[in-house]
Length: 386
Image 1 (cartoon, rainbow, N blue to C red):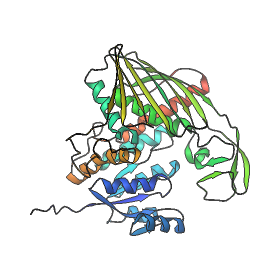
Image 2: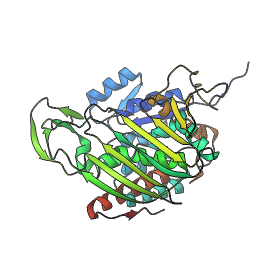
Image 3: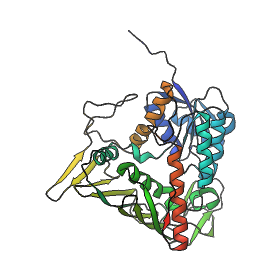
Image 4: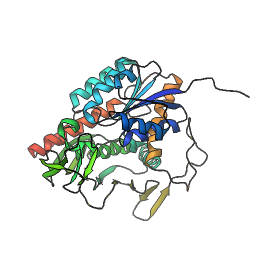
């Protein structure tokens, strides 16, 4: 009998709201790491999260945890305005870093974070989860193999309803915390990145129209409330970020695109759709049916279904067999697997060519957001810098 004496990677997750616990689960399911500590702002809530998640340690002192020599990797899963400071502290402490998007509130800060990460020699990635879906990667492979032909048109959108009522309130509605954009920065960045990931094309310019369809909302008076929907005392506040957006795209090489984004479309929960129309075939993917990919030409339509067959990931827990549905949680797991494999193997970072979305990708997402903001304010086409 042989054994691998390599010690498991020790991870810390900062943020115990919606996404933090999913990072805890995904880290464990890579098969390469365990979560040694979680960090939150409220002691009672954080202790409860630690107990429910089976994490032995918890803290409300993020900087102390970042400086802990027993921590190898730090996951930043906090509100947007804290991402840069926490990621910088982690990199300066010699940790590898996973940052939820957006990695910063503006492109300039994102660029500085990229520079720091590349000087540090540590692995640093942005959690653009939709890249992790098997059928998204299958679509990318089909495009790369030339089966779609010359790409002509890319269209779709990302539609939700979680902020569709005037009593719905969340920290993402606070520009000082979330940034100058909401729908585009929160969900539009996923659509933008997935398009560029699948097609290999780069957006050259865009024209955006923003709409704040609920101009006044009720903000809860109780502090520390992550999400409110009309319960408890509240005060009316003016909304300064977009509920919805429509965006036209021009891609390098001549392809065109269009998407609709909304967080106020009643009855739509997480309706992320993407169509890629080529000269030979078209592809269509819907996140709410993530294991299916439509491939169509003028003669027929084929439905491809996820089937890993005998191929399994190089590390960690194997993917489920066909017929055993995998979803968003598995996509996050599969997104961070290459990151953890690189850390475990001692591979040096390869900026711009990493097997995971590195912080350069996160900075490009900020360039997209800022171009959309500028276009919406001027009514003009705006170029996206490389």
